[in-house]
Length: 397
Image 1 (tube, rainbow, N blue to C red):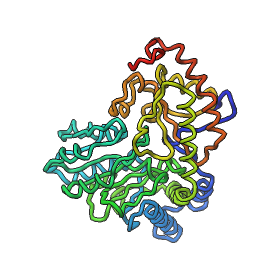
Image 2: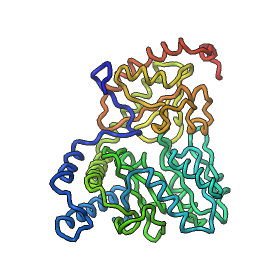
Image 3: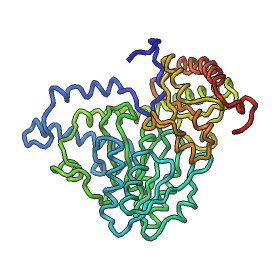
């Protein structure tokens, strides 16, 4: 696909990331030279099994798991989240209540809605204006029949970080399983599952410069879940099907690179994000950062613009070769304001005019400068076309 400009400025890294060249190089031999089936008894297959074990150990190291046997490979975050929630509930049949937050990713929200249709009781915890949940509200909603709490580590739209350690401790105190969707955090902030009692944790390869179609689910040793895909004995009987060795190897390399980047490069991304955010706010009046007062991922800013339609702004940015988002990538094409911003109390007129910029390791100062320079003219032009005049008068709608 081509833009009207040859320049591509990619500020949508929460949606997906560029596969790192080192990852691609690591994967290539496993499509051609090393193609054996890991379940085969002969050495050619056994070598593939050994590579999978190495990958399991590397993922475990990145998230602080004590044992590589606590890591299970999946096709990505959606499968990991589905497996964690449904698999855990299937083995606790007498408990029919789960707790999630109102700002979860669609793959958790939709699973919860489906379970509700099957007779489960679902409590959806709200968030404050900064996007954070109220731990007191969470505790008040834990019941004797609560089987599972599923609350994300950090939000994909705003980057707001949840108090996951406190959530895990509450769950442990009440004998409830805790599943954490950590897809947006792994590779951006240190994660150490040995430091807080989370039972299940999901991650995805394509969010950390690995390939699409691969993810992992951490299952704390001793936690029982029902197998989600029945077949052979792959993944120690919990997920049947021949392993995707090239993608698993790619995830291994992506985790290795992510560990190094956490130590050496993420502060640079934070500085770029802050520079972009400051520039936009200072150059464009009547804007607000959503989640500004809360802890956020170092790469993410979600900004609402008075008198603007986010979709129109994205199209205009695309003409300049700039890729951003109006919210979750899974919500693309929808014209309803983000459910995340609504849960935070952001008025719909601002929710319609919100843009998410999520930076990554390959972004530069020059790219930030281009957006800060070009976006004000785009916003000014589009605001002239906005039917409502209230924003021009500084009236909060």
